Image (tube, rainbow, N blue to C red):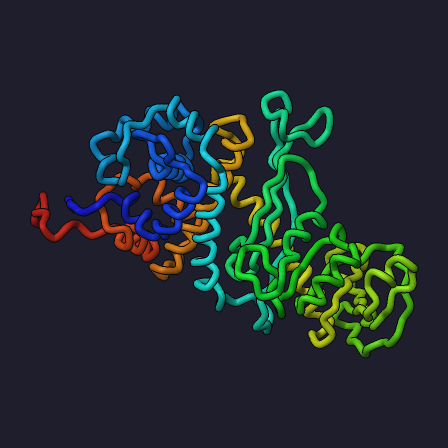
Length: 399
């Protein structure tokens, strides 16, 4: 038997531990904490995400069953559900959020050269929103209306690798325009959320607010979004198109409404496109004047990767059943889920694995406390060849 470290401990080696300790120190997470540290809390919640634990009692029972192996996995405290519940309620969720952003900063360069399906060298972001429905009586702070509760998520997704660049978690429904305001930071800023000059931001028609779009354009970024139906404008110039591709028009326009003209005094590009699989035409607005019109239409299709990202994390991570009902506990759990997602994405690239993230998670969920080299565990599964017996283990039958 391999006598090395557990798979869980090897997986945790990929996290930037100094960044975690920085967040703990910044928000005084371990202030007056005697035994169950913020690191133990993170390891416990990460274990719960990777093994799909249903409740605090489930987490406690599972980890206590593995008590002899916990020290080798990095745990330094005995896990009790009451202690974990108290930590989730009281310790600042921003520790988890900052740590997730530190991992995102590592993951995004690893996926920077992934094929987008288009000949684009620019970074392409997609902005959208989803909600995690909750019982309003248990989560009164997460109110959508008088009868329904929900936790809204607003990720800005890097479409190369589907790595979230920024995620806003709010306690009530807010417009995507409000989330767009979080990007309005001085150009060149290094903090998460800064507008990236030269990048393309693909959004839904809910983000059609010309003052904010003009600020985005002035920062040197580009946007692509669907146009609203009743938008007053005048055609300045029509560009040639190939109608066999589904394009119906490619125009340079200016806004003629009094308020919209003041909000966006420059010219825009308006493209109409008919998808053979859809019964109606789509109209797009952009400030990018050099990209082919068909590429603009294709970029809007890529925005649906956000929906796939939502579907994936809801199906494969623990963000539907929560271990606490307070806003702090829920937000901490969501950020931990995102951290685990990005951590597995980093492992996939660092080990050059052809396996999808789902398969890697499934393998990890049943092998966390095995003492097998992580790369051997995952590459054996990738090649479809059963793991070879350890060289130090004598064969039972010499056939």
